[in-house]
Amino acid sequence: MSTAADVSLSAALLAVDPLGLGGAVLHGPVGPARDAWLARLRALLPAEAPMRRLPAGVGADRLLGGLDLAATLASGRAVAEPGLLSQSDGGLVVAPMAERLPPASAAKIAAAMDARSVRLERDGLAQVYSAAFGFIALDESEPDEPGVPQALAERLGLLLRLDARELPRASAADGSADAIEVMSPAEIVRARGALASVASTNEDVRTLCLLAEALGVDSPRRVLQALATARAAAALRGDAMVAEPDLALAARLVLAPRATRLPASPDQPEDAPPPPPSEDSEAGSPERQVPTEAPLTERVLAAAQAALPPDLLAGLAVSAGRT
Image (cartoon, rainbow, N blue to C red; front, side):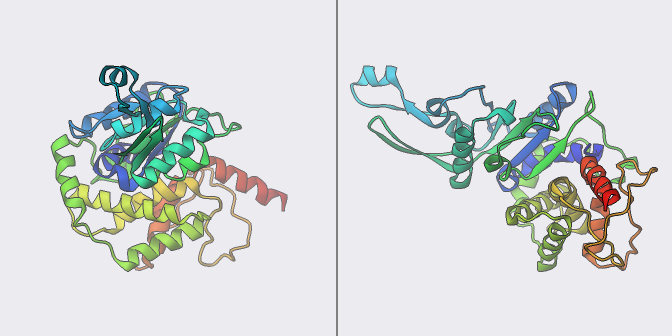
């Protein structure tokens, strides 16, 4: 389960840069926790930014646009009606039961996200609408069921797991004393304005690339999403440079939840079986004590290990027991 501090910050990060982060997969059942997170996100968005829900079984006409029959009959010429994606330009689309989206619909949404526009060419119509939006996929799937279609999930940077009935609240005890628990829309507007001037270094990018490799995350897109998350975090802090805490937060929200292997410790060969989970570790993953003079990648990796999914840890432990 995502930590309270990270859950608290994730809505603010999405409000600052929905396009850079792409959106989020919010995995968990319908309940107060999910509703509270969505309400927090809505409250942080600028007033003019739309936040639209995707109806179940939505068709191509409603999704992409089509012929406005009433206006066409009234005017005697073909009149286009924008679809839900273009109506969400500058805001967010929320999809309940996103794991049930048909692959064709998921592919259309993914294509619109890539182009940041929707091209409508049908029924004698030829229109291009701006459609720059972030996407929130509400995933209610069980562990043994398929999740959000891969074409769409690949474009959503954050992966949050909410298992509690109530949204956890962040505190200094979460290990993030400077975490932003409550943001105002004015602060989000300030951070949005500062985002373009936030700088990152080659060392930051290298750190995220090495971390992705260590965790078995082989998608270059995830590194870009992690970097966007780190930049949004710096903008929230009012800093013009990405710092180590921003990289650690990005690693926990973007890379660690998608890990396919445990990173090898400096004195452990990469092909060695992983150690069994620690019984006294809350997430089932022991956090290595890394000296402050250790390389940046080692420090960020140590900070991210607590966010490794429990099912990954359990699966690797079982595999190690069989070898």
